[in-house]
Each structure stands twice: as C-alpha cells, then as structure tokens.
Image 1 (cartoon, rainbow, N blue to C red):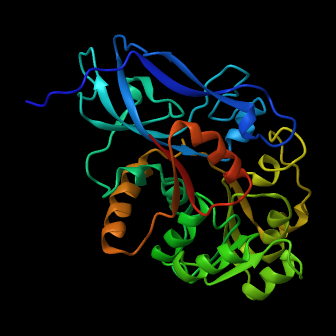
Image 2: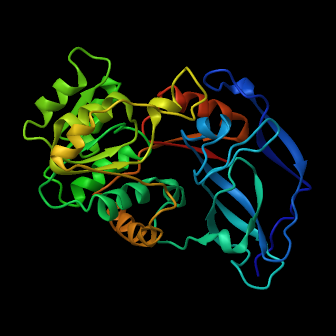
Length: 344
C-alpha cells in the first residue's frame, strides 16, 4: 500500500497584477499563496507537475477575442494553460483515480481543482509526460484534417521554430511532404530547423531580400500547403507563392500577438483577394479544440515516432513558479526554440 504525504494547506499561483501597456513583463505578474482548493462532487484535485507557456496569453491578458476558445483575464485573475499533473484527491464517484497522471487546462498554479470530465488520463503512450504539452496535435490536425496533405507536396510553415512550428515541419516530413520550408527571424534557429526539424529551407524575416523573394527562391514551383502561425507579411508572401488549389491553415496570429503596439487582440493584414480567387486558394482557421478525434491518433503516432527517434520534442524548461513570468517574457521575446514549459 502506497503511503502518500499529507497535502499542504496552501497552494501558489501566478496572477495578473496589472494590464501592461505593450508587451507584458515580469512585473505585471505576481505569485500569490492561497488556501488549498477543495474538490467537490464531480471534481478532482490535481498537483501540477508542469505547464505550458503559450503566446496566446498576450491576447488573454489584453482582454481576449470574442469567439476564441479561451477567455480574457483581468488584474487579480490567475493565468491558465495546458498542464500535466497527478490526481491527489477525488471525492468520487467516478473520474480518474488518485495517483493517475492527467492533462488539463488549469496550469499556472501548484494545485488545481478540475472537473473530472475535463481531465484526460495519460497512461504511458508517450515516453515523457512533459511531451503531452507538445503542440504537435494541433500541427497534425492542421496537416491531416484541414490541409489534407498529400505525398510530395510543398509545405510552408511560418513561425517554424515556435511551439507549433517546430512540430509542424517534422510532422509534415513524416507524413510525406516533398519539400518543407519554414520561416524565422533568427539565423541560429534557422540552422537548427534545417539540421533537426525537418526543414529543407528557411526564409529569414528582417534580412536582406524580401520574404516574397526568399520564398520564391526556396519554392520555385510554389507551395501547396501553408500552415500559418504569424499572419502579416508572411501571409501575403505565401499567397504570392501559392500554387493553384493551395490550402492555407491559419493557426495563430503572432504578428499581432507579439507586437509592441496594441493589446495583442488584433492582427490586421492586407491581402490581394484576387489571388485567392484566381488560384482557388482555400483559407481555414483552426484552434487547438477543433478535431478532438485527431488527438488520440496523434499521441499514438507521436509516441511511436519519439521512441524510434524519428521525431523530437523541442522545448525548454523553467524550474519553479517564481520563474513562470520570466519564461513568458523570454518566450514573447523570441529567445527560445520550441515549447516553453514550467516545471514544479
């Protein structure tokens, strides 16, 4: 019989202290101590082991966007995001058992009361529980459910070194893409993308030569699929390079979310709609909550690919709740490649 240590009386969490003007910095957040939450009927108490830091928090902090799958937060509110943790209390009946490892969306706190129905038991499908914080499921759904990627096609991924992009390039390659092109603003990241993330070529924003010219050189015959994390000029460049019948999947809007100006809740871009018409380009938005049926399928394939060494999970880990705000600040500043994770 396993003897578990007694639960603490308090829990720590990260709250928004003030709405920033421009990009958020560590001083806009505070770590507070609260009484340990108590689960009621149909709920479980989870001790979080790790949680994800994601760019859309800029939008959340800015008040959110109507129709988005996540609400805005205001001063005094606790942040949230994908998390992995262990169930430590379940008043029952039903739901995951004490000791089960689960994923949920109440990160940014040590202990979380989560609806039992909102927990996903993880099992051992992935060799490292932290890999459940990968954004690969979103990349997989974009490529298989929306773009319906076909063997030999050319794929362009904007923001190719980020949490989603670092998985999209590898996944497109494993699904049979003939050529995979990514974008980034960092020559150092570009080298890693070419060496280990499945990219044949990388276009660099902010360098000599326009994005359109770089993309035309990287994909002289055009692109068939565009998975877009950025918007802005990269969306315009992709449209110019699109082949007839190209499929665009819009996953994010970093051009607005990570802008020094505004609140991160808009990402306006001017495009030539004639190009959409004459090239018969389809453009579809997708969120992480769409296509839930793809999640289990992805995890099975992801686990196999991780164990065989065919794919990696690029990520950086920050230790401790006190470093969470710094992790967000550095992620928004583009300092890290892949997913940013806080471990507790």
